[in-house]
Length: 458
Ligand SMILES: Cc1cc2nc3c(=O)[nH]c(=O)nc-3n(C[C@H](O)[C@H](O)[C@H](O)COP(=O)(O)OP(=O)(O)OC[C@H]3O[C@@H](n4cnc5c(N)ncnc54)[C@H](O)[C@@H]3O)c2cc1C
Image 1 (cartoon, rainbow, N blue to C red):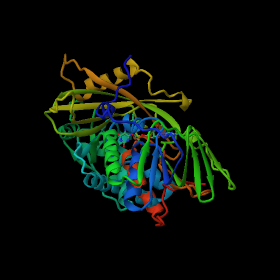
Image 2: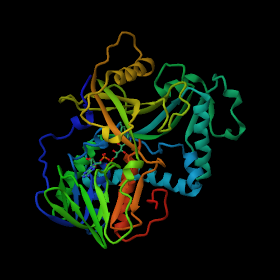
Image 3: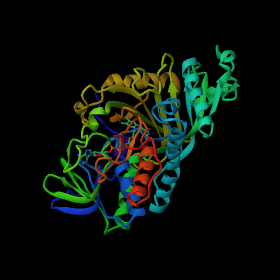
Image 4: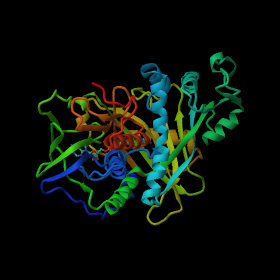
C-alpha cells in the first residue's frame, strides 16, 4: 500500500502561511471552498465588480479534488453530448458546450492578467477506441455537434477494422477511413486493438498550482477587497432577506451573498429564515466516486500529450456510472527535485463508487490493486518495451461528485438569491468551474444571464 501522494500538491509551496479566521468578519461576498471553483470565482468577482470577497476554506487551498485530479484540460461533459441534447434540447446543450469551451479564453485571461509563468500546455488531444459500440456512440455525438452548430471533431477509423464497411449511412461525412498505422501513431501505441481515434483540443495544467498562483495575485492586486481564510470550516449558513450569516466555528462571517464552491460535499446546514426551506441535501444526490491515478517520470524527450484509451469490452465508457473504466494519460514537463528536464506520465482510470460518500478519507492509503490495474494498462498500451521497470513516484486518489444530471450547478438559489452555487465536481471540472466563476461574476454585476442547463433547478 502506498500513500495518497499527488504530484500537483507536491509542487505547491509548503512554507506558505495559512491564516485561519479568528474573529467575526463581514464582506459583500463569501466564497466557501478554495479549490479551482472558489479561487476562480473570487478572481472574476473581484475583477468584474467592486465587491469585497472572503474565501473560507475548511482545509488548505487546492487540497480537494483540485489537488487530486488528472490535471487535464478537457471541454467535454462526462456524459455523451447526444444525451444532453436529448434531455435539454439542442439549443441549450449547444450553448452549454460553447460556454465550457469559452473557458479556454478565460484561462488565458487569468494567466495574462495574473502574470503567471507556470506550465500550461495546449495541443490536440486524442481518444482511442477498440469497439464498434464505442465508435458509434462518439459518432452520434459528432452528429449532434453539427446540429448544434459546433465544430465537428476529427474522427479516424482504421480501414482494416472488421466493421469499417458497415458503419450506418447516417454517419457518412463524420469520419474518414485511414490505415490503422495512422490511428496508432496518433494514439502513440502499438496495441493493435485500437481501431479508431478522435481528435480534439486538450491541455495540461496543475490546477492546484494554478490556484496557489492566482491566490498570490489576488492578494497583491486587491489587498483591501480580498482575504482567504484556511482551516476555517463553515458548519452553518443562516440565510435571511438580503444576506447570510455563516458559522465558522470560532467566529461568524456576515455577507450579502454566499457562493458555495464546495464541490457538492458541504457538511453544513442551511437555514432559510422566513423563506422556503433550501434543500441542503444537495450533497445526498451527488454520487461519490473515488478516482485512482499513478504517475512516473521519464526524460523530457516528447511533447505534452493527453490521450484517453477505451479498451475492449468497455461499451459504457464515458458514462460516469459505467463499471468498466477508461484510461486517461497525460504527458507534461515536470520540475522534480530541481530537475526541470523531466516529463511526468500520469495515468488514471480505475474508479470505485462510494456507497457512503462520507466514508471517503483523503488520507487512506492507495491500494496496490488499483496501481496494478494502471500498470497493466501502461505495459500493454503506452510503455510496452519488454523488461522495462516503471517506478511510480506518485500514486493518488481523489473524490469526484457526480450530480444526477452530470452537469455542474451554477447560479442563484431560486428560494433565496443570497445563496449562489458553483459546484458539482463531476469528472471534468476545470473548464466548467472557470466558466461558472465568470457566469457568477456576471450575475453579481447585475447582468441577467441567458437560461442555461447549469441553472439551479427547483
Ligand atoms: C481523480 C480525479 C481526476 C480528475 N481529472 C480531471 C481532469 O483531468 N480534468 C478536469 O477538468 N477535471 C478533473 N477532475 C475534476 C476536477 O478536479 C474537479 O471538478 C475540480 O477540481 C473541482 O473543483 P472545485 O473547486 O469545485 O472542488 P474542490 O477542489 O474539491 O474544492 C472544494 C473545496 O471546498 C472545501 N469545502 C468543502 N466543504 C467546506 C466547508 N463546509 N467549509 C469550508 N470549505 C469547505 C473543500 O475543503 C475543498 O477544498 C478530476 C477529479 C478527480 C477526483
